[in-house]
Each structure stands twice: as structure tokens, then as C-alpha cells.
Length: 451
Image (cartoon, rainbow, N blue to C red):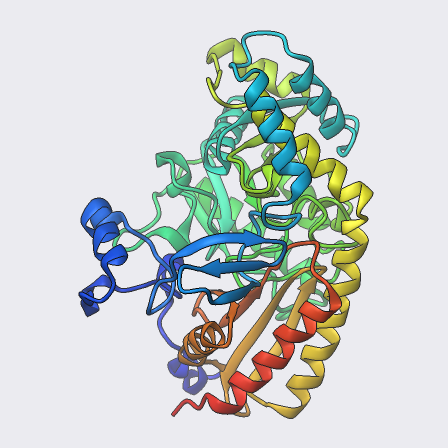
């Protein structure tokens, strides 16, 4: 790519700024709920859209605002089997009325869930630790890797997001505003192009090799490569299946661990596999999970080999008072049952392919769509200047996000420049709902112009 095109690229954007409400623009007296939130939470308040929505209820793929407006939710992967799914509601309600304690007591509800969850993993990953958030799970995973590898160096992709603890913020470049990465963290580009190599697989493995060499130059032995296998914050890069294999082999040869962050791509979202890493036929040393596990009930966890967990526990004790409580286990169990019984993995593949096909037809008519990619119900739509695929257009993305909101569809953005629309609806999405999204996107595009 020439210097001219590089100059045309916009500045990189921090992930929470991509479609966030900006309180600096002023708060209208006509919105007392917004004034109250900002007064209570202050600078830590994160709200979506130029005009934040007050949501009062949700069901399936739809959310209802206080003013009665219904929104089709293509943003939120937390309610993975659909907002307020009756099976999850019933399971949580029943369990909290019976018993809710910590995991230092035996409880069959918890162990039944652990057995069911383990059945979704390769046999070697036979120990599971439950926690309350994906950040907590990733924090523990990084500490396990440090103990097992004897190293301190971490490799992540250049726009990755893995959570918000102190350790995990340091390996989440997209969350950092005014500080750089610490010296023990080296980034690699998202696996988007073969470059001078014959394939994306070779190019990505070469980047990992260079990162390992850089860590060694800085005096850090490799501890772990932490990877969200759909590369969601980087802009959604899923294909070709299998391109991770060579990179993971390179990590293991250097003595590092592969931590598969499945918080976003896990639990059947990619359609052709239950886990994102399974699409690439690779074996993680640690798998972390989060948001979709409880369909909105806060729970998370990790799966790993017993010897890795035992090695860590020899040096550092670990427990979570609320992680793995019976109510969380009941929610998690109902999610697994719904995914299987309602065949939601098959539905993710079917509806994802349908949306992708329709989006590709739309791209053929509108040259501001540079690319459509992804797997199952996790897709990315790259937006560019008209006819100039090499020039990302984050302003168009912002216009479409707010224009779709005005048409009753909620969606977010991702990518280094914030120009990738992130398509992530509930797994229970119907074809009719899929068509509503594409039709309204087409309408919004036709009325959205950028200079």
C-alpha cells in the first residue's frame, strides 16, 4: 500500500468511543434519566448512541424502550439464546427461591452443569473454574500461563479487547486511551491479508514469530498468546478455517500457552462449531468464557488441563465467592439445553449464511461496502469511501449506527478505525428478523452520505 493511501486512513479509535454517547456535547434537561445516570456514575458512565435509549423490557431479538419504541437487537451477544428466554427465567427463578450459596459447599446443580459444560470441550480440558466475568476468567488464565511457562511476555492482536482488570487492561490495546502497552506485551496485526506470504496462515504465523523475537529482545520469555478466535474487536476475521494452526504451533514451540478467549465467539455463535477455536482445529491450553454463558446472568469461567491448574494452585490459592453459585449454574445449564434442543447452532449457521448472502448482494450495488466477512451470526461489514476500499470510513459507520437506531435496529462497530459494523444478534434470530435488518440497512445506506 502506497504512502498516499496510508495518509488517507483515519486515526485508530478506542473501542468504547466507537458508538458511545459523549457527555461533553451537553445533556438536555428533557432527559432526566440521562442526567441522573451521569450524576451518579460520572466519567465512568458508558452509554450507547448520540441519544441514549432507556430500555424497560426485552424478549427474543427485541428490546422495548420507555417511550414504547421496539428495537431489533443486532448488537448484544449477552442474551445469546434470546432476551428473557422463558427456560432461563424459570431456571433462575426456581433456583434462587431454593438455594444460592458459594462453591465451598457441595451442590448437585453446580456439578451437573460442570459435567454438561465439560462435555462440550476436548477431553484434555477437564478442569473448569467458574467466575463472575470474562475479565476475571482472562486474568486467571494469564496467571496460570505465567506459572506454567515461566515467562512474562504476552502476544495479542493490535486492537484486541480481553477485559478490564489491571492485568487484562494491559493486554487490551483497544481499551487504552492515553497510555501505551507495557513492555511485556507485543501486538500483531489482525489476520486479514497474506502480504508477501502465500496465505493468511503463513502471514499470521510469521507475525507471531516476529513478536516472540521482539519479546526476547526486551528480555521477556513468551508466556502466552491470547486470542479471540473471531478477532471481533479487530474487525471480525474468521476465514479461512484453520489459519490459526501454524501460529499456535509457533507459540507452543516457543514454550508459550495458547489462551482461547471464547467470551464472544463461543457457545455456538459461529455456526459450524460450538467454539471459535474448533473452526481452526487447534487445541488451546486454556479456554475462557463469559457473557453468553448465562444469557444475561453474570457468570464466566475457564477450562484447562488439570496439570496447569494444579501447578498454579501450588503457588496461589483461588476461589470466587459468587463464581459458580447455584443460580449461575442453573442459568448456564438452561442455556446449554436451549442451544441443543432448539438447534441454535444450526440456526446460527443458516441465518448467518442468509444475512451474508444478502449483504454481499447489497455490496454489489453499493461500493461503500468494502467487505462482508465472518461466521454464523458473527459478521463484520467493512465500510469505506465510495469506490475506495483502501480508505476506511468510520464517519459512515457512525452515521449508519445512529440511522439504524432511528429505524429500530441496534448495532455496534469494531475494528482499528471503527469502520466495521459488528453483526451479533441472538442465536434464536428468525429469517424474517434477518431480512428486517438487511432491508433497514439498505434504506439507511441510501439516505446516508459522507463527504
